[in-house]
Length: 141
Image 1: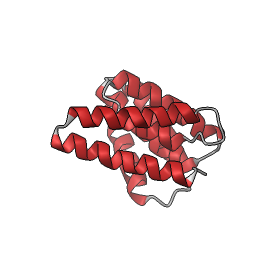
Image 2: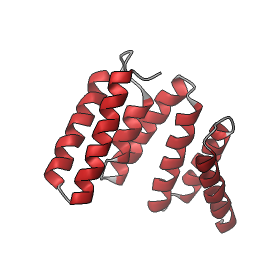
Image 3: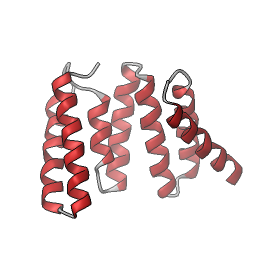
């Protein structure tokens, strides 16, 4: 379970990042991103480390390759604590990014993993998105 204080910080930073992006304020975006990055690295390999902070950092990382590496880190942390909801959402995000990068086979593997992880999830919207993308990618093979 994620520390409540860290969760609130991450959630607040995500809102600030979205707002800065919406306004086109790159300086504010970069400043909030740096704070989020600091939280992640400060908590890494401590009892406060959680996949959600790394997934959020990946969500706002502009370089696709860097974002993919951060999703990998988030996924390994989710697997370590058997956080199925996080495993599903992270694998789905990775798959969507891999599709953008033309890594279709890797994306299919991540979509299949996301589907397996989401089986016990209550998030019907995520399940439907995973199913839809997986069906599309398998049909396009």
